[in-house]
Amino acid sequence: MSNILDYVRTYGGDSFRERRFCSADALVLAQLAYMNWQSAVPTLKDNGDYITLHETLYCGDLEHIIRGSVFKEENRALFYQTANSRRFGTLRLNYYSEVWNEERNLQMSAITFLFPEGGLCVSFRGTDESLNGWKESFSMVYRFPVPAQEYAATYLYRVARLTKGPMIVCGHSKGGNLAVYASVKGGEEILRRTKRIYNFDGPGFWDDFFKEKNYDAIAGKIRKYVAPESFIGLLLKDSGKTFMVECKARGMEQHDPYRWEVYNGRLRKVCRYKKERRKAGEQLNRRILDASREKSRDVIDAFFKAATDSGLHKLSELNADYALEVLKNFHGKYVYDRESLIVFARLMIYMLPGRKILR
Image 1 (tube, rainbow, N blue to C red):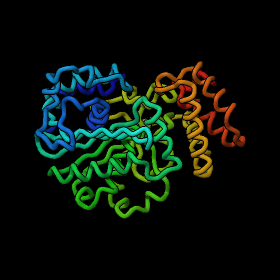
Image 2 (spheres, rainbow, N blue to C red):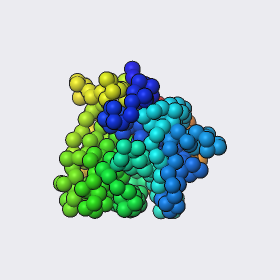
Image 3 (cartoon, rainbow, N blue to C red):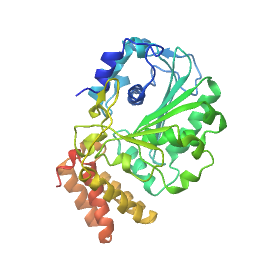
Image 4 (cartoon, one colour):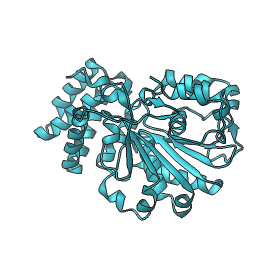
């Protein structure tokens, strides 16, 4: 199976003039947004001079850039491969932004890649490992807009004021949702300059969003990619073009973009799939949409409170032992109807690696 690491190895010698920007490139840049660029790249507030991706190799502690985030080992390989490649190494990085506020339940980060040939790609980071980040992502089912969406729209607007040329906007997971939201809310200049928006397995929106002034004008530029069993990209609703990507992993592991197949230099779209593979995610999404926003808020808030009380700090720590402790805390402190408990139980199962532990 080939993935984006194989894509960089195969096509990293081609410039963007020789090989046009495609979905695999967008996914590569969406993953590079997970890096901590604070020590290497000028921030949006600095408005300083750019640095090329290759030059970041000489910025001191590279492990600090890669940091202990999701996809750490694969991101390390991606960082070195892209920085040393002709295709990506000449990209100019600027306007890094990272906002974190646990009280406001806010997590947002973005970076801008400027192409030597002209134009740029704005990439929004997805949800990190922290419970704070995941809680904000799940709060989308009862809260609109969430703080990260508002910050993302401001970021894209400010970057557009500082740059020229055509724009591409992308992101994985929550980053994909932010890419769509910011593009719609950014104003007429962004609407005119944006050529494509890539949402890689990011959540959708409530119906209210599709009534926004610029949504119809920008919907045709959105390309959403989801894996057959991943629940995150199925959350809420979407009305743009959606493609299913071939992925050999199962359950929530399909949310990992390094498990997505690349074929002939493009993300490989699923030709056939079994409907039952998607059934569980569709059922959970339907239950969430059928529940009131107040009920969804109460259940999700209680879930993350129970997780915090259990000593859980990062999603990666969630295993069978922690899951039982979270269930015990939830059951001991909160009383909900049967429907709410079903949503809670299914939510936890999806967050467990591979969805196998509680089956």
